[in-house]
Length: 304
Ligand SMILES: [Zn+2]
Ligand SMILES: [Zn+2]
Image: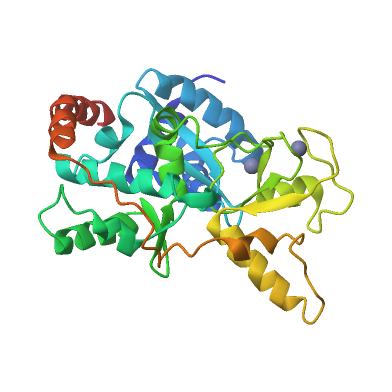
């Protein structure tokens, strides 16, 4: 398949959208097929994306597919693949806002015990690069509204959009903290399990584990070490779900060995005096400012 008018049409339409669920993307594709007078079949979409990405690659862009951590639903994001992705993507953010966003992302990724979630209170404790706490709150609200962050009753985590769009940035900045799912090789965050076998570093998204090991995990083996699967939930939302599941099991006693066990020992994320607040120092911000602005302009030019 070669790059055709259909690819051009689709790209024009998707540039307005940039991030959408699979059925929406397929609808756009179907409409473009009608206009281009090409017969529609959803089976053709994957090879179509392959050809599209060959051309997008020359523009340092990619149509990237990913699964929502909670539901496993498929989404597509049009992403920049080069340089400082935050600066390129967030062309409407000031340098101080970019610095603050990076800091919030760092806090989320470094949250204790692989929670991948922080309270907005913790995020607001650091307001140094922005004028005031009020500005920081308004900026956080904007990040939630524009799908940079997910908000779960005041608890902030990285959205799928951020995981897809900032994939390279996140992996480069946090090579020792972020783990890929052993099955799909995408970053693991709030909804996951790790292998309970000593010295095995396997992590699975819950939706990948459901597919690979079955919903009840009966008789499943770790895809990495091949031992019988003894999953330990990681990610705050997986652990909250485990607590609910345990309650649903009623009177039956669920021991510390149960999947929800370790979760109850975890310190609450939103209360802790013990949580350290790293300050974003001014010097740092200025350095980044100088470095990012020229690239950001370049990014804008390219995207159009
Ligand atoms: Zn996975
Ligand atoms: Zn294992």
